[in-house]
Length: 260
Image (cartoon, rainbow, N blue to C red; front, side, top):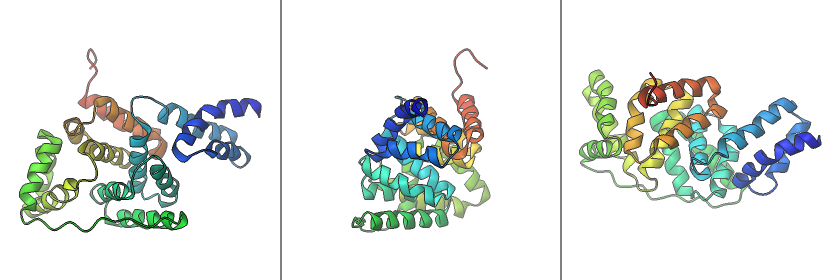
């Protein structure tokens, strides 16, 4: 048991940086109910993923939360809502991040995510904070085009080709509603939004979308190293196979010099 506790300690420290003092002890308690090998795997994930220095823990946490939202894993989201609040994300910022689920995974999963957030706030006896609804813009389509191009650069036009090929009305709706609406709201930076979208594409296996949007994420302010970290991190939530598929796309889009 002493050996296991020693191995648990580094991962426990990372977990406590997210959820607060005492969470490391909670991880140790898992030893009594889960297979020790699986417990070691969980602790190793915190140490060797969240503990890496290429990306701050706060950004990692909101990407994890939105990855879980895209997967529809409501029970697992509850603890990550607490962690996000503990790391300094405000309620309006968390709500803003959750709205991206409507773009990446659909409205029902978004509704379920908001329900869980409300339940967590109620359990914490915290009063919900909401922003007033923004007025609808008459020129949402034009503003959406401008926002999409500013955020994703040339990748935006490539991304929109499929919608335009299917139906011009659908393309206009997507442009006006998502890029002229959701993406223009002020609470999150384009960099954070792009990393959240990359996380969702990874866990959902949206490889074709990843191919198009990876260069766009760089245009939005995320470094290649940060994008790689999010793709790697998602192995804890979609499994190694899903993460490895996304890693292959990353290397296809951003090949290492001297390799094929």
